[in-house]
Amino acid sequence: MGYTKGRVMNERTTSERADYLSRRRARILPVLAIIYLTQQASYITIRSGTVERAVDQVKISAWLVLSTVLLAALATKGFWLQPLEVRSMIDDEVTRSNRNDSMRFGFIFAMLTCIVIYFITMFKVVDGRDAVHIVMSDGLGAALIRWGWLERRAHRDA
Amino acid sequence: MPERLANRLKDRRSELGLTQAELAERVGVTRKTVNTVENGVFTPSATLAIKLALALGLSVEQLFWIER
Image (spheres, rainbow over the protein chains, first blue to last red):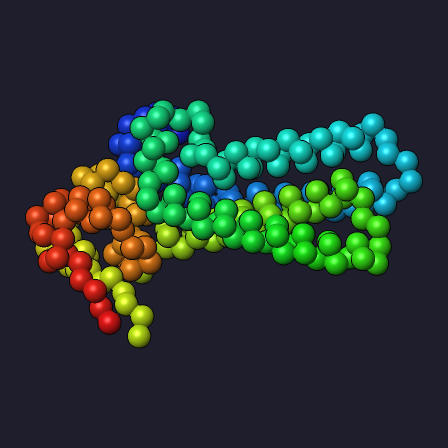
């Protein structure tokens, strides 16, 4: 009665807490991937315009910050504000396996994007910044979607 | 014919009256890990297989076997 969400969280065991956070991450990952990929639409709009305004630079910087955060979440245990024991349990064997699998998937996707861009440059000039943006967005987006799918599958009961 | 690591984790856990969460707590992993091993979605490492066998009072060979 009268429990706040934070209080309930504190009363959970480490395993329950890790499981709760892991489930939450599994739900959030696909949403994050969609937000990240839809952000690309604004980049394309900015780049197709003739003049880049200061606000456009802010939008591109926001993309760069989000990319860095997502990359760090993919490459580390994540949940940086949680106690170490909870973080270690969230990053258990299955999560590490899913994380590694999604990073491999993202890498392959990024390389395939490179091949496509390389092919396009035979016929059309592609700006270096655009190429980096596309490769990074594709690789990270693919890895996030793959990770989300694997995590949701892992939480699903037989 | 591909090989698959089968297990009697669910049966043994039910025999002992444990939930996935309780077993996960004993082994020091999340419920998700117990769930994926039980369903055959994830092949555990030797370390985790030994921990699960110890927690369920069986040998690793009694808990896991290769199915062809």
